[in-house]
Image 1 (cartoon, rainbow, N blue to C red):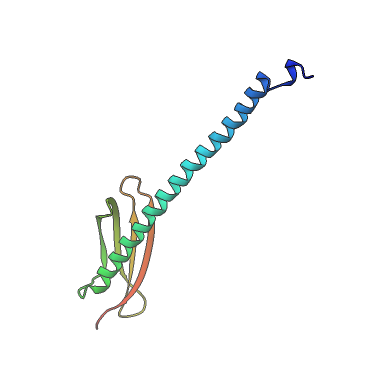
Image 2: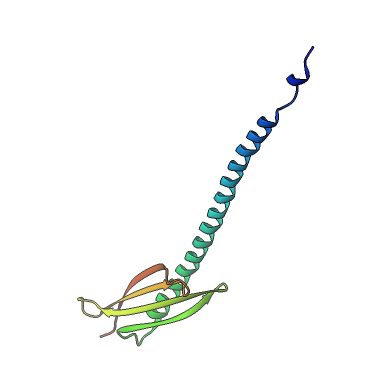
Length: 122
């Protein structure tokens, strides 16, 4: 016959189990937050790359492309981006270097940079 002390869990065992569960749950919550933050950053970077490609396409299609720097702000899917386009002549005649930088307007963090070469008409 079993005595009353042999059945069930003691209060110390229950508290220890709850403590271990709490530590594991906090770790999972932190992991979830980091995953969401990473996904948000990747989403922002993907749209920044689209903006950079758009700026390069605009520069490549401009027949009056001249050396200099221009900048502005644009919106991709409800998110604002600052962009800078720099056009500089290269050592090779009749070729310009187009450099695009896209960043977050609030933090200044650069999400992406892109480059292209464009030949210019003589």
